Length: 381
Image 1 (tube, rainbow, N blue to C red):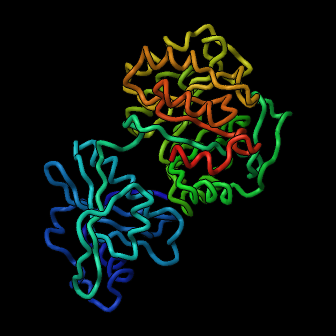
Image 2: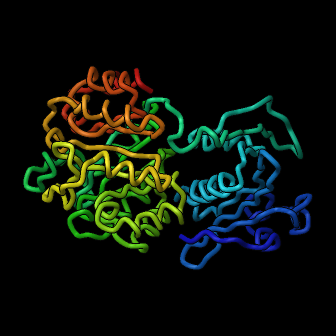
Image 3: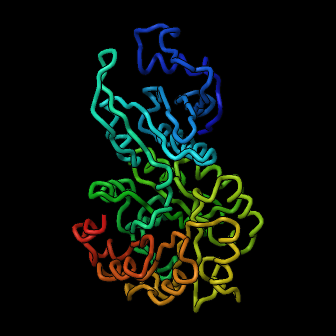
């Protein structure tokens, strides 16, 4: 998948074929098409999705989002809308909106858009305005989020104990099924980890990401094996909303900072693995002498704002999270979006993390082992 700028004329055939099959190409042009920005998604060289964006001073409207029937359900529409959000944020736009067909309201609702005003009919088609406030996007609000984790080995949903590949348990052979179960109860975020990729040092399970991104409305971050520009490109092309980066930020900070600059801080989820307040890397096999506080400070200075921290002494043991460590981090860096990871054993742990000011909590084993029920999770959604 490749997203790039196209001309207004390039949009017309797909726009017509999908939305107004009985009209001429001339009839599907819109007012001020020449003033818009037009984008297309290309899959294997074929134009499969188009959209047109019209920027105002503080708001922007997109029009005529259309995906070829054979390409629908694969995440292309969601990917191009995420691209528009990035553009609008760079232009300091505060609100993105469209007049959506009534048949598409559910699609936009999944992506965080809300209905504004009443339904109306134009040309025999029912529409409603859908709005997305951009100043509340990517994890910049302090609203607490439950973020279930799905770890992948050989395409299956597994969990490790303290990162040990010899201590793995398969919970479901079909990660998409697991993701849909979470979405069905109201979960909006998902933490997807490519354990094969982490071991190999290159992204492996991108097809799982592509499936989940294309067939759910979950905002998914993806990590494991992201070491090169190409890995990062694959992750975003496969539908990740954020890329989870850990070891590269420690070992190759200049490369990491170049990614932050290229893609924007809103697309990066920095992972800090910690042992006794020191940063650990290499699948937790190597503990550095770098303090987690110094590490975070240097990254925050480069604009990084979405951060999660895993105390590796706690992960997978269901013995409770490192509340005191996380409290110290939040007190020192109050403006970041800080997500706790590792050790959550019951719903009381989740409440404790919310109380100290975490933006969210990544939860894995406690859900899969039945320590936290789906009904209990709903209380935080």
